[in-house]
Image 1 (spheres, one colour):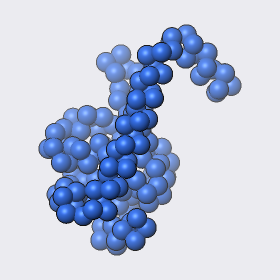
Image 2 (cartoon, helix red, strand yellow; image 1 turned 90 degrees about the horizontal axis):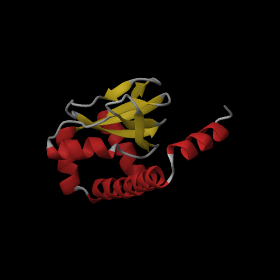
Image 3 (cartoon, helix red, strand yellow; image 1 turned 180 degrees about the vertical axis):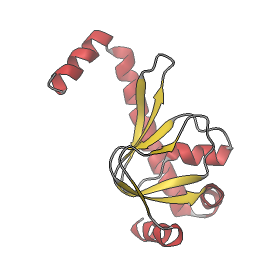
Image 4 (cartoon, one colour; image 1 turned 30 degrees about the vertical axis):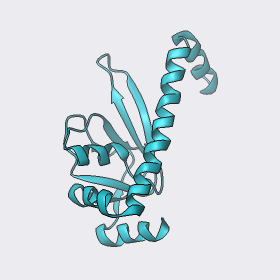
Length: 147
């Protein structure tokens, strides 16, 4: 995938994204699919009660699968994506990303690998939230974060 990553960077360039920069917001449309060269992105939801729930992170060498899915489907983006660290991102235009999904096996493989990893992560989060009481999760959080 390294050679393909260089090809993405060469064709679309790298954009510096500062920590805290919002890349996508709920209800917007996906104009491009981020491919992360360096840094870390967080994809999350905000509940009606204002609670933030992290869906997954986009790590170096990965694409944002939710951006790819919404680019492919034409649906509104259902979450928020923010840079958790200063990052370098190549933004593959949505039309190109969709065409590549159909034509380029390496892009399709990257998408499927990222989709599988993030689906398993979401299932683990869901299982944790359903099996642990709020009190127990709060205790674990406080113990792990030194509060």
